[in-house]
Image (tube, rainbow, N blue to C red; front, side):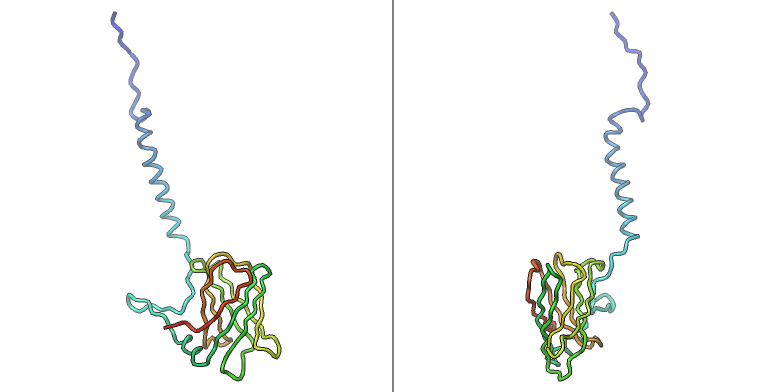
Length: 173
């Protein structure tokens, strides 16, 4: 008995092993192209800091911190993340205290999570008060400035934020 199989061989594009090998390669090309496209068109935002670029290096402007040291400016921030209450106990060698202070709560990488809060002076005290716009999650940088932005104080904070007391001082050189 002669058992010959006369079924025709399928063309190359209908072979299952070929598609088993090519499917991951095609998927990688499609995903890689889409991620490349997204990385080109999306904006990363900026990281807020007193930096400027000179040639190939980045330099930090320390003049605002030095001005704060010269004026003896410092403060203690009392933060309650649950209620959103902020109070700064302000200390300075200046005789005239600013009417308002600006507290910038900066996310390390995403500008959309930054908060700029106007703090108002509590009458006849050295305290300023304000409220958070949204509760804080994750690491943040604090930048406290006066109305004219002639000086600033900085601090780095980490969770948990429940009733924290944070010292704000001029940045160290």
